[in-house]
Image 1: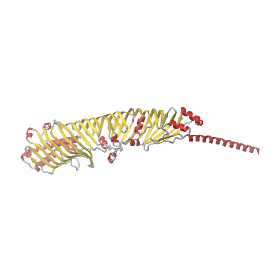
Image 2 (image 1 turned 120 degrees about the horizontal axis):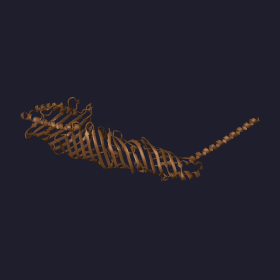
Image 3 (image 1 turned 135 degrees about the vertical axis):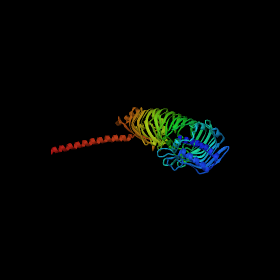
Image 4 (image 1 turned 45 degrees about the horizontal axis):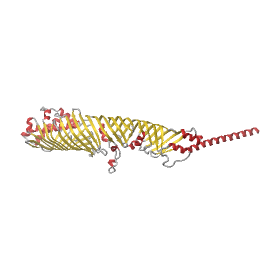
Length: 611
């Protein structure tokens, strides 16, 4: 940004200055080749670059000095190796009013450039061709000292128009990385230190030439006499067709651009609109080698679902593709961000956060929200989170501390099942990848702990299951487990690896029984599994001991299988009893066998003694 703005201002000023110098030559003798030779020599001395003008110069006089030419090329400056020209202009028209020149004023009628290209290239040392050219220009000594402030202040332009202008960026390998196309730019009745309307439109293109976004701008511009301060007011900038998920960006408000020798300082205050989402935006930035940005972003209600979830529009495959995060990653790699974000609410699919606030920063392509605070699931959330936009798919790391939340809301919104309720605390340290909830669950890894109280398991009446097991009755129908199981406490340690989520040291405490063991769920196939020890208490214990005294004091095996939507708990009393009876039978058989063996042994000894 810095180099581009300085270059454009320097280019326009230099062209105007050279045209003024040529006025004197034109009064005495006009010769196209002579004037071109003078111009080429002046540019060489000023910049060390080679200027080539293939077309003849067409010159007319009074009351305007009009110059028309074309097929202009400006090479890279000396010491910068590249076969690609720095600048090319197919057509140039300019006119200057003669009479005011003698009063120290420059009144430009019009400056028109058509089909021009500015190629920004960096060499292996990291230098850009613009920086090298400006260095040469600053070192050159003008034969006649000119007060640039006075000159700028007395400059006015009736019309400045650029059409079909391209700003191309190249890698050190000379490969085109991206292109900024300016289809049309027009400024009328321009003068320094006064507000002037400006309008422009164009496109952003990738290195392959594919259009990535279209843009248009209307504003009022004021440039200081020294050219170092540019103010924009009543700005309305629109960008469309940005990506498959982000279709429309609109920026409005007031901006200021300050050009220094080493950097460019930018500030903006106004509104930002991303598709249907509106934000209040304040940003200040310093653009040099890095983009140092301070951002304050606020909104009432933000819905992230349209950008992250799969589109319901099946007419185009592009709408179904994941959000392209590469432009964000490329920007963050050259930026250093500090800022704040606040929202009354943030919605992600079925999940809704309230009173959201976050401090923003970045390290490379990773954006940090540190800390991130919100009201969620009727409780409080506090965490440090990071989003790596360069990862494929997008990578998220989060270490939330959730206090006094309604766990049922969390489970129903994340797993899309209504199976549990209760107040609880969660301390987690998780990482995942993906843009949709299902994909995030399938890539989930990390650790944590869960502790709930005063809750219930819905759709699972374990009391009824245990009672049926005691009576050795089988519950086969789908409605057999309608109801719920109230519990006083549930706790466990969580461990996740690529979507396999384990709950170790799991304990469930209810008035009539306790469960202890471990459970697991696989988000890739939405399966459930678990093995527990069941300890009966109260009425259920009395029923068991009355019917099966031999099971008194024993912990019963409890098994969990099935899926998220159809869990299948099981207590195999019959097998347990058979195992118990078999053990008793085997014990009696062994005792009887030993008794027979002892008797036979005794008879044998007695017989031997008799013989």
